[in-house]
Image (cartoon, rainbow, N blue to C red; front, side, top):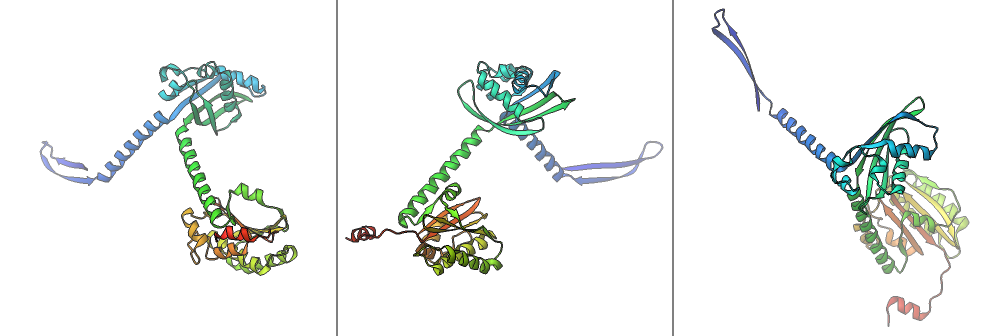
Length: 364
């Protein structure tokens, strides 16, 4: 693509004397213009297909803000109307076309379903009188369940609500995809948890962050922050003092310092920092080490837990096999929100009979 320009000079009789011209390469500019047109077309299609509806209202007379919620709902039901919607939304709520739905009030949109109409009006009102984003989950008149991402905004004049607008984006498929991914993650986590528990004879237990918190006993000291590698020695001394005062019978201070030191080192090395706290539960000591890193890659977990010497940036570290030997039980939670490891030791152990030992070791 080129842009051509010429400046010509003529004499008094109109004869061409000469001229000067330029030819400018505008190929890149044309490409940019084409890309912008394509983007605009794609955005237009996105809006037409994804924006389920746009609504607006203008209250005449304005609605006083001191009305009760029920009174505000009545105003909204009768005076808020659609100005735009796509075919999918129209069909879901019983209209033959999007044009048929335009201008219809909230009560008219939701038909005989008074409860749903009132809920929708309440959602819009409770969104507040400034720009606000909120989600709704509702059953349509055709029996489908839909997720909508809503925006709402309104104008207040003289302590009265005068007009407003809003949109609703149908995010049902996105929500379904997110739930499918969450279910897959739960299934994967459960599979790993079952395998680890079986292979370690119940010593390594994978839990969620909430389950970890439920599994903790009573704290015996304040949380201790380890912000850098330079503080590792201080953290070990902190743990040594706490354990010396609270260690149950049967637990070894040196072993626990070794195990917790390895865990703290991993937290600082891979996440930049971590926090340590000691708890007591039914005669057992619990050392919780938590960080806010990117979590441990599930594909590395088996090697990290069971292969001596294995270590990657996101692994549990070389000493995890030692940790399992030292502790009675290790609780583990890991994900994008971070990793938490709880080391348990010193609890009462039931004596095993010869038959129990033979059954556990599969010796016949």
